[in-house]
Image 1 (cartoon, rainbow, N blue to C red):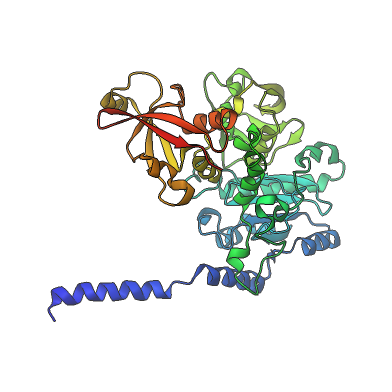
Image 2 (cartoon, rainbow, N blue to C red):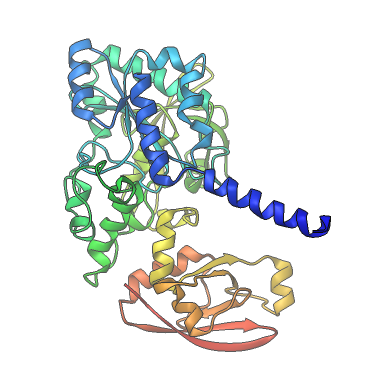
Length: 442
């Protein structure tokens, strides 16, 4: 056999061998459990044990909520966090709990941005929440949102609040939300017949897990499956501070890095270098705490009282948000966007075009969204089956030409269309205008 034949054959065999050596998802999950339990630092998926230990020791609790195991949270991987010389001594002052699936999770206490792949809670044994940590924690959106330095400062802040408790109980009351539609995830209609309150370690543990994003999906399904509009608070949950003009420093608790011109933050006269001490009377430990406050401002708008520190002085300010303010947020990174693409665009992912693309396709004004992806399977293949292709430029949707971004289209469908409707979509392909019909789906 010649070397030209032998080398490719050898490479194929080596690739197959390497693939065979890779542990399966199931093996990784079981190995993760064994590793964490063997180390003994984190309590593994047992909140009752954590509450009991916290009551016994007087320590606060830190809860790390992650996938089983999370293959995307590399920046704040447990090994990195546990070994950090600043964070480790702080964690030792907490009862540390690792939650790897949301089955049976107390949703009256643990309310957070479920589109994230990583989130932390710091709380008292009586379930009083001190703060949250973790913002837009998707593998492509880490930069500018979280850091080890920021985590250390959030933990330190939680220890300070714990030392003051219960004298500060009233200020912390707003950090717990009102009860959701159901008290635990597996009770939601979309999940009820598929999952139980426990992970199934005696069977297929991976398939038994309720992932964080499924909670948000199940909440939206309550409305959409009944032909009701999804509340805007669920379409645009936990707005990023950037959506109101606040660019925060991820290495600090809630310090302003910059303020966007002509934004609500600018109109509130907030400045770079300001430290946000409280919003709505709630002490802030992180960017996630800012999002928690914003999440509870109605879609119709409202005013948020703030206490800031500037040059060593305490200053009061008011953030005023008008009707529709949530729609300024970028939701394209969210897992929820995948669900809305199935509903509203038949599985297409749409991105805004730039001036060069507009000129190329002869679009001078109005809507111009490029089809960046077309789903291939199941309900996500509806657009493909209707004739849409990657590279198409959508210039009109159901008679409207003013949608600037994908989420505008989602909002329109939610407000004006229902399951089973069809909409006309005009697009440009190869210089030609076409009109296709697109179904609105469950």
